[in-house]
Image (cartoon, rainbow, N blue to C red; front, top):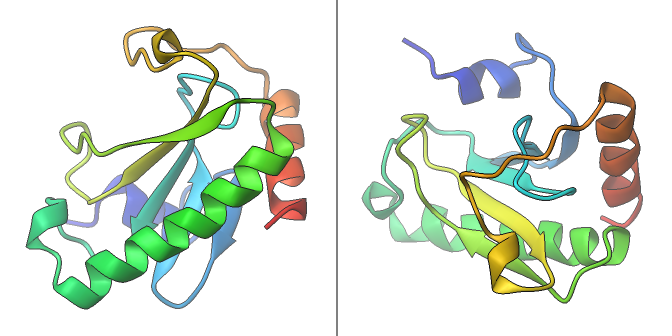
Length: 129
């Protein structure tokens, strides 16, 4: 059965898309830890990042770097944190989270953003991609 991320990639579930290429897809997390919290996924389904072949893993990191640079330009922060947790959805994904202090990276504390705020953030990041 396809994961929720595969359904997002295929357009079956709406998202706040940031960028995509033939192998990777980036979109805003709907339960963000911070404004601009973005998920980057490979288009192939694999539930564990270290099961990816070397080329796919390297490509995921390079694509994530491009997305992170766009987030930095769009969202005020000191840096972009990267986390790979991977338990909530069985599809490899990288969390890119703008932070200004370590306490900003608290997965137990989610932001409540309106659809309008999410759309504005996504547009701002896309404009810098």
